[in-house]
View 1 (cartoon, rainbow, N blue to C red):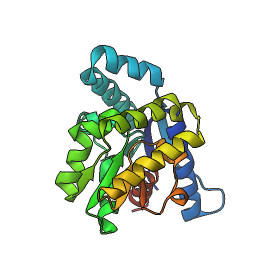
View 2 (view 1 turned 60 degrees about the horizontal axis):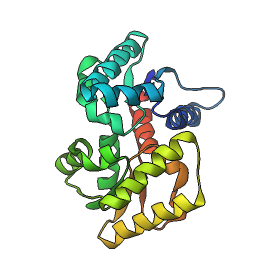
View 3 (view 1 turned 120 degrees about the vertical axis):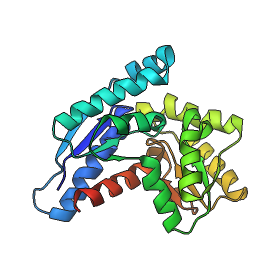
View 4 (view 1 turned 30 degrees about the vertical axis):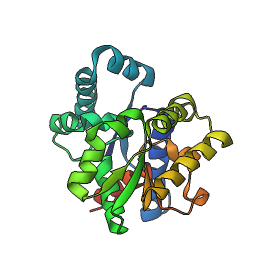
Length: 230
């Protein structure tokens, strides 16, 4: 079993999901008292947001790359960034280390294609839904047509993430709104919907809707576990 390196804390709510899922996955494979070997750096999320706001993504990329090198030096054999949006600087992180960096959109795109889906909806932060680093990767590498909500609903999803989910708050009202947006994407032709923010699955799960949902956290962890046991 390889040692996992986690760049976390963006938010810690989603990082907790990664930590639990990796340990549960290892226990399922090895049984008894086995657990995952993990080295992790957990950021102060507010400090990261401040750097993005004040200094831009280039400074953020350098910060994440530096901590990635620290994880490699600490013994990590594969690297996961426990958040969708910071994958905007994935190439800078990957180039900073010699160990495999597992891109969350690759884990997701592969599973969507395995399901035979060609048109998929995407929910996430404003950056994830509007910038090309995520939708472009899904389109170019996996030949997916990616649909996002209209501007008003993109803003709503973003608010739910930052005002509620990253704080561990789940409300029925916001879940209904997210399900409405998912329904609208389905009406526009989406055959499945990617929960492209690691916290979204805290609110909306597959049991809440008939359309296939792709929980990026779970898919990222599954990919990592597969590689760790090769």
